[in-house]
Amino acid sequence: MSNQSVKPSLETIVALCKRRGFVYPSAEIYGGVNGVYDFGPLGSLMKQHIRKFWTDHIRKETDNIVFLEGPILAPTPVWKASGHLENFHDPMVDCLECKKRFRSDELDLEKPCPSCGKHNWTEARQFNLMFKTAMGAMADQTSDAYLRPETAQAIFINFKNVYSTSRVKIPFGIAQIGKAFRNEITPKQYLFRTREFEQMEIEWFCKDENRKKFFEFWLEARHKFYQEIGLKDENYRFDAHKPEDLSHYSSATTDVEYHFPFGWKELEGIADRGNYDLSQHTKHSGKDLAVFDEETKESYIPSVVECSVGVDRLFLALMCDAYAEEEVDGETRVLLKLNPAIAPITAAIIPLSKKLSEPAKKIYNSLKFKFSVQYDESGSIGKRYRRQDEIGTPLCFTYDFESEDDNMVTVRERDTTKQTRIPIDSIEEYIVNTLKKS
Ligand SMILES: [Zn+2]
Image 1 (cartoon, rainbow, N blue to C red):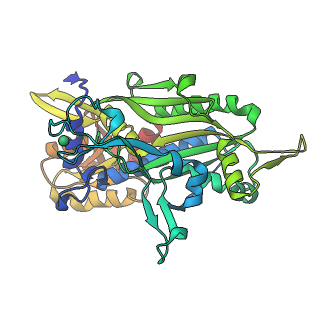
Image 2: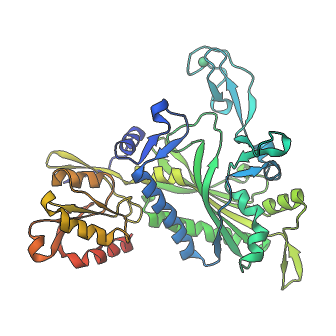
Image 3: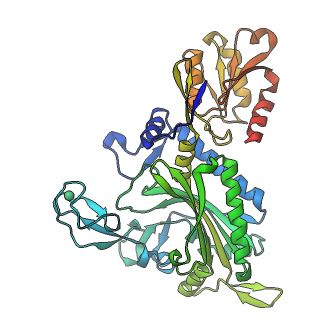
């Protein structure tokens, strides 16, 4: 068996995601829509596992964290205070010949339109990336609302609520997973830059003098996360922003970048934001978001260290990273070497023949509420193994005609194709041990 460690093209990943039900183009039967994707049965399972892995990982790092679920809709004052209303723009130009729209910072306007080859640009102008909508039946000024362009603001505006009701003490974190929306001028690179996406964020509140310490703490914690989730060392890196590239309120920002088929791109941002966010909301809301320090008997506005990951980007990175092809007896075996904790299906239960469906189903039923298992009975056994390899299932348990007599099944491992005979009543332990190794 020769192992070809190929770096898959983006087209290969897109095709696999479509073929196996991970990701579909959105509104496909109506011709599709740009910059939005639908996660299919396997994609949605895998995203559930990514969210759980992230949540479990934070809770391994610290007990001082609580979770929040803010709304997607928020009224205008929130985005005024956060600066999004004024500053969240990309510069755009239109081609007057073909009417295509581009980001002017990504084009050389001296050159002709990449779409039609003519040279007739509009002036570059600013385009706000927030989706605007109207709340309530009266579409007047007071009901303007926006789909959130980031999840963080719900955490900041609820800081005092959480602080005063959750028995937390500074330092502590508020974490949130949720959708965010940006009306990208040119969505591109598949799941990388989309108009609707999901974020997993931690906002860590601490005293100003401890900012540096906690920034370092979270850098290290997030490093462990990427190691444990199983991205190959050579495919991700931590890239610290130079001082001149920092936002005006940030004293340190590091991007976690992944080597996608289209280059090194950001997966996560880790930022020391100072007390900018809570100060802004204090100023604009007129509500005091300071806390009282029992030791110094002084009030202060806490500082924030933020870790913000794009779920869809991480999903794409994991797919690219796990993709492998192997030559087996002159045929190509495609497999996803996903961390077992992330794989959509942890184990497939496979009867060798449909005649054995009853006892195999019994095994499946005993496991289905404990693990992500799939019952798979149609097609040749070889084809079923190949299918499970291609969707990243780490374990297949096959029930055959001997199983009737010896109460054993054959377990086949995805990465090695090694097959071992084990007692039926040890299947559960086998799965648990496989997950533990991950
Ligand atoms: Zn054009």
